[in-house]
Image (cartoon, rainbow, N blue to C red; front, side, top):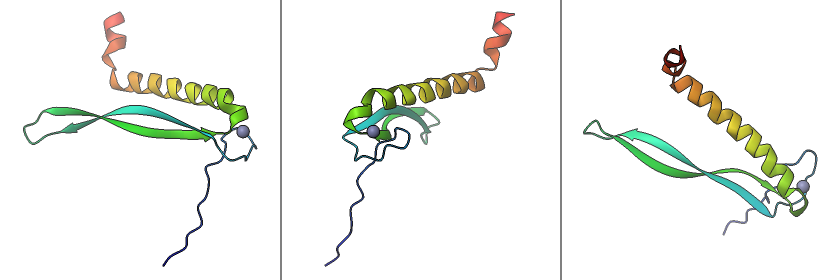
Length: 87
Ligand SMILES: [Zn+2]
C-alpha cells in the first residue's frame, strides 16, 4: 500500500494561497500531420490555472490578458504576409 499526500490547487491571485475552488480551462487546437500528408486539427483542453472563491474575476482577467496577448503574437508570427497585403 502506498500513501501519498495530495497537494490542493492554490489560488493564482498574487500572494493569496487559499485553496482553489475554480479551474480555468481553454481549448487549444493542435495540428498534426497524418501519414497522407493531411493536416488534422485536434482540440485539446488545457488547464490555465485555479482560483479561490474570492478571486475568480481577478484571475479570469489575468488569464484573459495573458491569453489574448499570446494569441495576437502568434497571429503576427504565423502571418508575415498580412503586412504586405496592407501595403
Ligand atoms: Zn484567492
